[in-house]
Length: 150
Length: 176
Image (cartoon, rainbow over the protein chains, first blue to last red):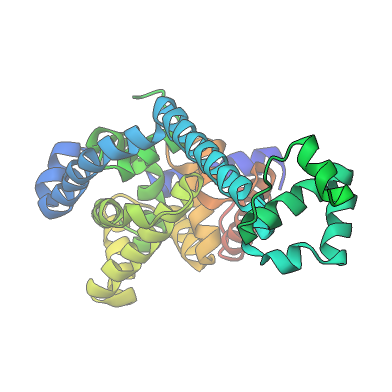
């Protein structure tokens, strides 16, 4: 089709379709469909009640507050957990073991590796204390008498 | 409100903002009437179908997942409503009669043949012709409603007009 024929066809179509721009009359529409319009309006009422919650949850201040509470809770948990584990780390074997076991070669050897000769002495003292033996203070005179048999 | 983009208005309308919904109706009324007109063949029926489609859209709006697809979604409702209306209005024959009676009042042979040529087109072809020849519809509006590019609109329009021209030529109308 050339331009001339195209224009001629356009004119014919325009005559047939015969269109003037339609205008939407909102008042008539609302009167014609009151139920649908009311449904639309009622949705606004529902949204406004939930709007408060959504706006609270979307607020950056609330977000920061929630984040702070979570961080605080995690911090407290960590502190309490560490305290518990520290208590658990206390070696109670020396108090719970019977004195006989505390003085075996194996026990003394472990004590030596852990703290040297001082640890061996401490372990021996603890065992003796558990047995109820108390070292008496003796004078040098008495010691010599005991040795010489005098 | 008038300058707000469609997506903003659709979001507000979903939340029940009646002013936003009314503005959307105002914007899309001519396009929807043109689509319905291509189906009903009569202007008054097309306007009725469009208003009913808007009422359905007001209720179904929360079901719309993507605001950008509002024009196409509304057009689909409008097409279905227009077809339902036609079924109720004594079926397709009645439609042809109605479109015939409206033309007989002030039409000559050439306009009658052009009308016949228009009715011979496919639904897509007829729709694009109505959309293009309705007063004041931009390519942008047509593109958003049909979901196709402006080039595709031109292609579809050219093919439809070519078919019409062939029909008119066969029926002995001069000018080609």
